[in-house]
Structures are given as structure tokens and as C-alpha cells.
Length: 454
Image 1 (cartoon, helix red, strand yellow):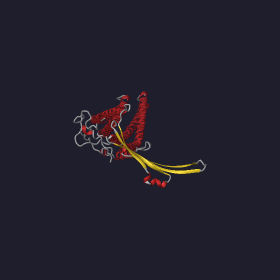
Image 2 (tube, one colour):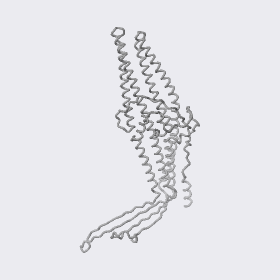
Image 3 (cartoon, one colour):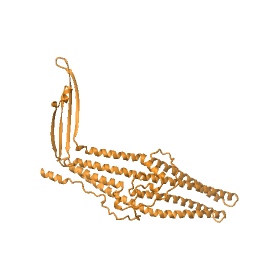
């Protein structure tokens, strides 16, 4: 028996040593994409955009969003689960008071009745000698810490989604302005061509072509206005408001703030909430495995029960009338149909799953940072090229109008110049918004604080 106990003890390992910075993935000393030097990413990243309305909207979302409030409630639930998991380490005591009133007849057909009062108690306490219950409690506490990290990650994500939706709404309003100007220009062309047609200076086909082009511009304007209401309602839901689609009209995209340093790749592992949560769940899986292994060890339980009964209520409080017993029991699992060993194998598999989930989360985090850093460079090049394209198309459109009036070009050339101007303006607005969104993606990837607006 002693040899079996020693063998069992040696098979029940303690918690393995874990290092959050050791994922099993080769981590370079520096980011592969170009990263500016200097201080690490600012925590208060929303303020860096210098937009008071944006800051107010992020504050409102963090205060009123229902999904975020649900995430906060999950923290409380997880903490109470940890309390429940550790309750078995303390004695469990219960009282069972009772009262009976009996009425009947004796052999002489006389009516008899009597009353009985009783108070019984039960006490049990499993002495957590090997730390099995403590390991289960640690698992619940580590899970609660992971849920708390999930909450902070949700705050960060909500702040980012609010800011990005705000920029999308601003771009959509600007796209409406571009489309409105396009419709106005097309109507001017229609009047020009109609006047020339009435004078016999152009063909009916030209008039049909410009009317078709005007109809397409009006359809595009309708689509632009529809995008505004779609984005506005989505943003209002993030703010915890009824989706009326009546947010303040915003028509000014801010300039991206100066690019901040990304820090070192190894720093990401202890900064990002999702990585902190994944590592916490790995530690929780370790603790559950230890608890399952220690279930093979003997359990020592103290039990006591007793009480008192009397026909007089006053006698119940007399300690001399009490009867009780105390016992200590030792339980050693011998055969459980493979349940205990199966439980150990189950938690080993779950631990391996948690470890690989952590590695996968870390790898994805590195990808997001590298991707945002690389996109910053290409988006800036694209923005400059489109800015130049806008300037060139506006000049070519003016020349096309003049040339058409002089009869030097066909109507299709004039219409193409207007389409090129519209497409260049629209694309330039889109890439400016993408630059802002990518900057937010970078802050998000680097684990910037969700309390960024504070």
C-alpha cells in the first residue's frame, strides 16, 4: 500500500513552469516591416486624432454599449465561479430543525396528542491535503483573470470599431458631396448638349448619352446616401442608442497622427489583452490537469452529525440533551471504471489545445502588427498618387469641356473626363479613410488601452 501511495504521489505533477514570452514561435528581434523608432504606442490613442466629437463618441460607446456591459457581467460571474470552486476547502455545516404535532386515539378510545421539537446538524470537511481542491480553485481564478482580460480587449475593440465607424460615416458624407457635385455637373452637360442639339450642332445620340450618364450619376448619389444611413445606424447601436440614423453630419476627415513606435515583438505578448487571456486559459488548463491528477490520491474527510429532540421547546437549548458523533474517513480510489484516468487524459488534451490556441493567437497578433506596419507605407504612397490623380483629372475635365464647346472632341471623351474625375475623388476619399482605419488597426494590434479616450 505504501508503494502504491508513493507511486501515486510521483505521478501527480505540480503546475508546469510557463513563460508568457516563450510561445514556441521564433520571435525576431525587430519587426520585419519598417517601424519608426521612439517610444512605444501611446495609450491614449483616441486623443491623438485631435477630434473632440470622436472622443465624445468613444466615451459614449464605452459607457453605454450593451455588449460591453454583458462582458463586464461575465467578469463577475467568473469571479463567483472561483468562489464556488474554492468552497470545498472549508467545512460544510447545515442545520435541520423540525417540528411534529401528532394526534390519535389510544386503546381506550381516548384522544391523545403530543408535540416534538428537534434540531439536527451535519458537518463535513474534506481536508485538502494534496491541494486537489486548491488546484481547481486556482483554475477558476485564472479563468476569471482571462475573462477580465477579455473585457479589456472588448473595450479596446469597441473603441476601435467606434472610431472606424465614425471615419466611415465621415467618408460616406463626403462621398455624398462628391456625388451631388457630379450630378450637378452632369445636369450642366445635359443643358449644354440639349442647347447644341436644338441648334443642330450635335446629334440626338449625344443627348441620349448624356442623359444616360446623368441617370447613372443620380443612381450613384442614391447609393451614397444609403451608405450614410447604414453606417449611421450601425454606429448608433455601438453607442447604445436607438438606430435612428440621425447622427451629426461629419464632413472632415482628420489627418493621421504621427506614427508611433511599435516597440519590440516580444513586448506584444504581455501587452495585448487577447494574448493575456489566452495565456491565462493555458494556466487554468494546467491547474485543472493537476486537480484531475490529484483525484487519484486518498481523500481525508471529517464528518460530524447529531442533534437533540424534545417535546418541550425549552429543552432544545439544553446542551445536555444533545447527542452527536464525530468520524474521520479515508477514501482511496481503487477502481472507477477508467473515469479518473480518462479525466486526466481529457485535461491533458485540453491543456495541449490551450497551448496551441495561445501559440495561434500570438502568431496572429504578430501578423496583425506586421500587416498594419506594411499597409501604412503602401497606403501613404497610394494616397499621394490619388491626390495627384485628382488634380490631373480636374484639369483634364476643364480642357475637355472647352474642347467639346469648340467641337474638337466627341461627347464620349467629355463624359470619360467627368467619370475619371469622379472616380479619382471617390478613391482618394476612400484611401484617406483607410489610412485612418489602418492607424487604428495598428493601435489595436499593439494592444493600446481601451481607456484611450480618458
